[in-house]
Length: 104
Image (cartoon, rainbow, N blue to C red; front, top):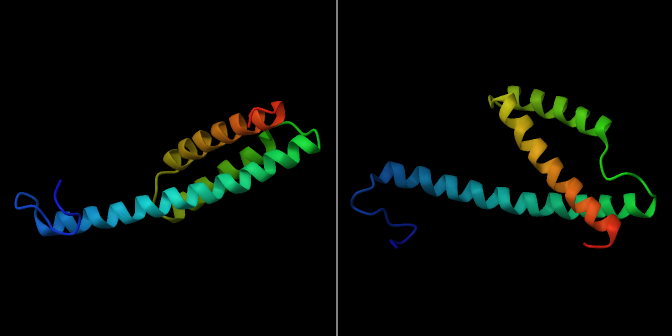
């Protein structure tokens, strides 16, 4: 595999620079998601202690509306933002169910 910083002869330098930027953003996203899941784990532990259900449909609806509006202001498709949030919420609920049942 070619060095990350040196473009290969068949890849234009401008494309290599865009790809480096994308790689950096992807790295930041992974770290942000890890931090988010640390927080949601604490929420799941609290919900389990308080005997609250893993899912909170009212909160999820608020988040969908908030992130759709944020996506529009960021020039991102709101449908994509909603799909992404729904994926995250589904995973968080799965984690919360595991915490509640003692599997996590």
